[in-house]
Image 1: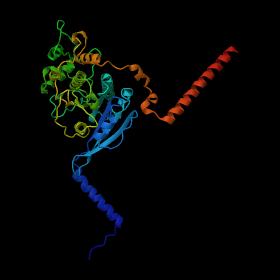
Image 2: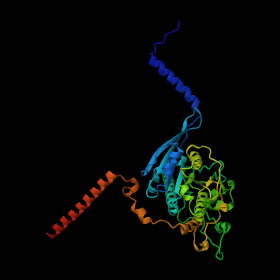
Image 3: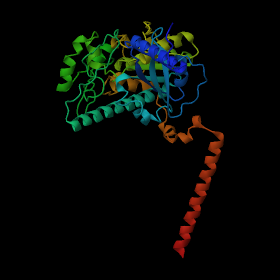
Image 4: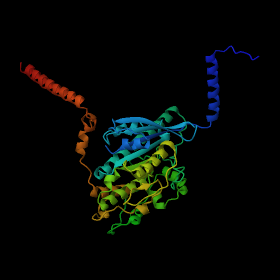
Length: 424
């Protein structure tokens, strides 16, 4: 006769659950959950939210991003495996709220952070300014995090932490494993008196310069500290010596997405070439990936999703490469070179007359000759998000206008009363 347990039914059920959880824990112990952070920024109303929703397979309408918004995505690597987590931050307002980069770019997130820069191809006149300001704001924050980390180390009187190296994809030909490109170090950031790349020495007697002449005219001057770092890492790179001298990899993995390609493809061919070659240069300069997309195209969104999943979940990235300006660009990091990109596309501008300080400055001057930057006065007026049309709320705005009128009336009455007191 079997022995009857004195445990209640609930106690037996709880014991069964605990035993199953313990067994499952032992099985999954070798599968650690991966957490990554992806920070999206870019052109105002450039389609950031729509692209993010498509990459996450979310069928929901896109709304204007309010300042800085957070969401997350989860994806399992296989059957019965824990789901990896991607923390996703999206910056709204274009460049007007660039100060908010300090929230997603922090000492906590930096080790697993990637950045996606989305540029509106349908507005080429604002493209360079948006790209330059947002990337500079991000790099300034990286520098701030680095400085704070060093100060904390000095305060504790501990041995400085070795700087973490930027992790490049396995298939990336530029693989500086010892090249200190990430944070917790000031190796990447230079004081005003230091130069990573010397100033541009143009050939004075040259009427025209091709790509080789342009890049050959630069000399790389590094500090002793940087030189020692470079010597221990450049021998591992498989790129041309000229590219080694000029690339300045972004501190964390960077993906540049050109949105609204359906509108961009209707542009004049010469203007398309200027935009394509310029973005190719910027992407290669920062060791970034570059892709043009259109949310209406399943094919382009599939490629875009592949790049996104590579950053967010560590998935395999597609091998497609397209550098043809007549087609959507698809260029994984390390697949391009300065010799393939060539010199800035220009027909009526003498490069030698631009007085550029470095290659990036040269490309900027040529680009802005073709696409003059937009008037920044209007952008400064919209610094206050309350005045931004994309955040309009009819009832709230009407009440705000009424209160503003009441405040102005109060100020006038107060001013008159003070004047009356002075007369008496």
